[in-house]
Length: 129
Image (cartoon, rainbow, N blue to C red; front, side, top):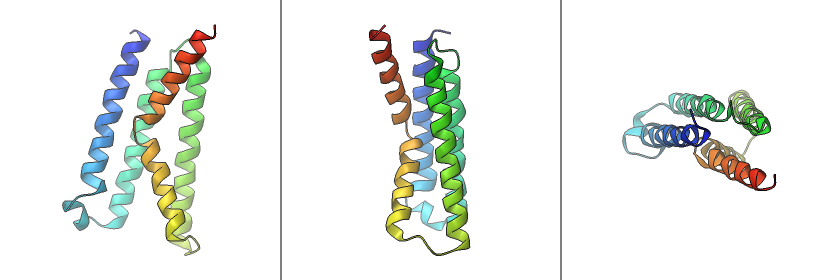
């Protein structure tokens, strides 16, 4: 499959997953009835679901360093969020502002924006050849 088509399919899939995250675990009246741990687990599952889609999109790309950026950044963010979640549940050291920032990081990596940014980076790198 052509790389551009893989990018388009991945963009649509990640956008759909982002929409599902927002509708079922984000901001909505029905979401208020879901237990906080279930919402957090849902957010984590959504974030982990985005990872293989992007991996598939960049797997056969001629510039393999793009795939490495995707893998390292998502691995770091998933580990970071897991560690913060464990620390939050075990201690009460983190303030609301820091946890809001962690939520913002999760929102960013659950969205199609990282895929678009890496795609733009690939276009810039191709022009430099």
